[in-house]
Image (cartoon, rainbow, N blue to C red; front, side, top):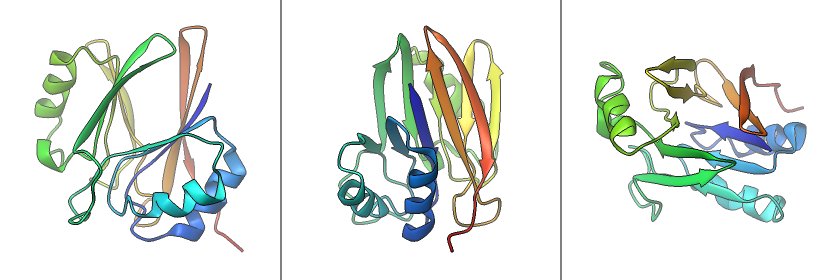
Length: 157
């Protein structure tokens, strides 16, 4: 299964749409800050399931602060990260993910990509799709093994 992970799109709907077109994932996960960008993606790609959480800039969003789900034998915990003060360190969010039994922790907010494992919890921050790093992550899960790649955005023409 190919999963596109994006965060901090900040209104970059065209860049988001181009990224989805390029990757053609089986699932899209949006980690907040302008989760309203997801509405256009849902319309443009109605056959691709999409999950989102709200970020600190999503003041009128109805998306939840976090989401938990099981997929391909892995437990996911996704959140924007601002409620766990990820800009000052990863301890609080890592502890929360472990307490919730997460195998894979997804968060954004810092605009800095990260892919690392801490005490059997895989932590993925795709960076910002439209600000700063202009990156996203692709997670591929195949028969309980997985790979994650942080990729640079290809500018829309």
